[in-house]
Length: 113
Image 1: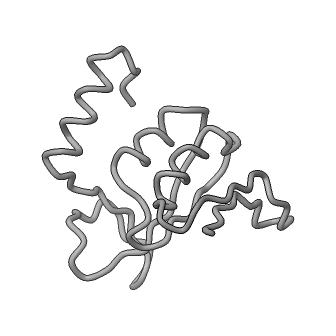
Image 2: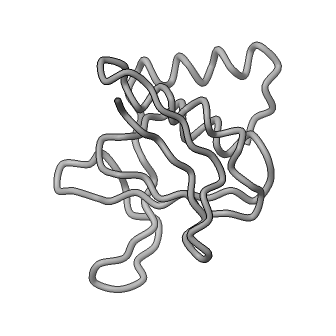
Image 3: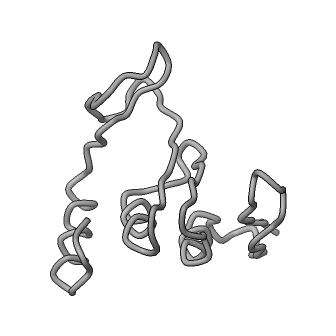
């Protein structure tokens, strides 16, 4: 079994918990939990456990939602601002399939952000 949780890091209260069979991907399940994320929050993503669709969905649903991603040497990005030697605001470059997905969302009436 795989376990996916949504936890408030300040209080350690679990906001949502779901189990799935081991052969299913937890990233698909995590995407279904995006609606349960409260407004005015920051989501921490593990390396390789997010995609452009999740980030777009997170920013379009609710209000004042943000995310933090661990960076690595080969991340496709441009530095927008630097806050010190290890902290930067990055503009991520998206792959063609991710851009097509965003265009599909915009053409289906999803508001642009």
